Length: 263
Image (cartoon, rainbow, N blue to C red; front, side, top):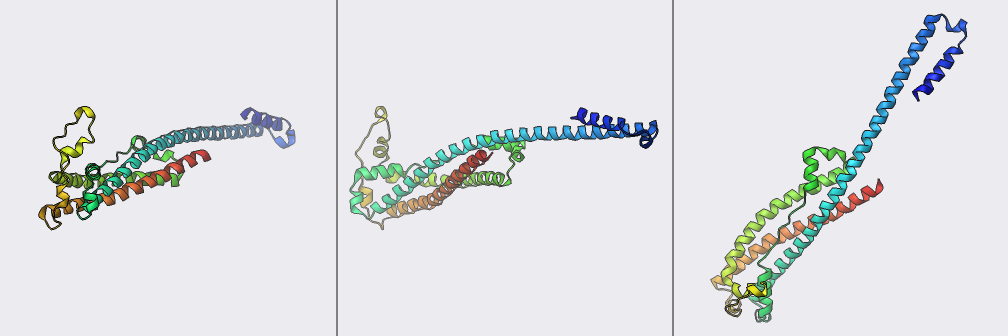
């Protein structure tokens, strides 16, 4: 490209009539100016090539980062799907156990009671996969994501992940504590046997459902109802929080895939 411009300049200079070109100094001046122009053009072309190369590098890095984020978010979606299912089962189990105190058909159904005591004794924690996002933050590569809207959605999602983790930790601590307090009300030996492998099973006594026939005015039933309701009051908003984050993760994953397809 530079040689091309130089040949044109030399041809124009050689074709310039002697009367118009002036003396040798004028020719040298024109030649020097032409050289300066060529150098400037060369610098501009080099800068443009360098910028293009840098932009291509950033685009390639952006694709790698977003692909990694999609994989991490897919794992979050699987985890949240499992956790929300456990949350829902937990809430339903405790609701049925509370109903058993006043519903004769439920409290007579020992297999159902054992199942619901078991389901109402366990909850699940959401553990996010933040490997790629943490790498982006620590390396300062968030700006490699060129679309501001996409960047904001990613940041918003992981801000919410952090909030959910804090909320989850607080609620589950109290739920676990309340659950431990409820153990004396149930025949745990019989209940947990159903969840054990055959080689570990050893049931001492058959399941005893007499507690559910106690008066609703008794202190033990009132304590059970209060503890169970506390668990429900903490698990219900946690279930909603997990569900909302799940939907946000699904939407973000879809948007990131769409963004890559548009590239």
